[in-house]
Length: 162
Image (cartoon, rainbow, N blue to C red; front, side, top):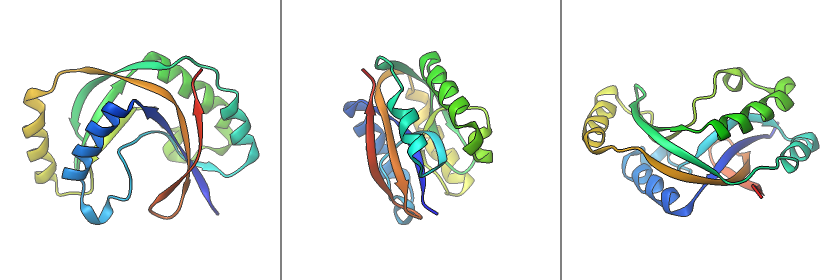
């Protein structure tokens, strides 16, 4: 059965920044996607999901890219935003009956630029990037809904914050 993935759309300047890093450091044979900030990994393909997402009323969110972390077999930038967490919490409540085990976990927003590599490769990239890391702000302008295609994703709909 087809499922949806929900991501937050970030401003194009920072999207390009994360895409460039991902293209340099993510294993080529596994890199089907642009860099992304996932809110929910598995949602059913139902009209109810679309209705809930259309009802999200929010101003664009300014979030902080607050840290860079070695995640064991990769590297990710972690995002801090009370506003984003509030949006996620409200959606989680609406989607409660549909949530996978992964989506029931505590929300830890991040953008992965490297994954599924040996731990020494992840450590090396982290050690290279971390000394110059300074927190910075990104703007989240809405939500993107994707159809999962067993690897690649197909964009389904954009829900702008207004």
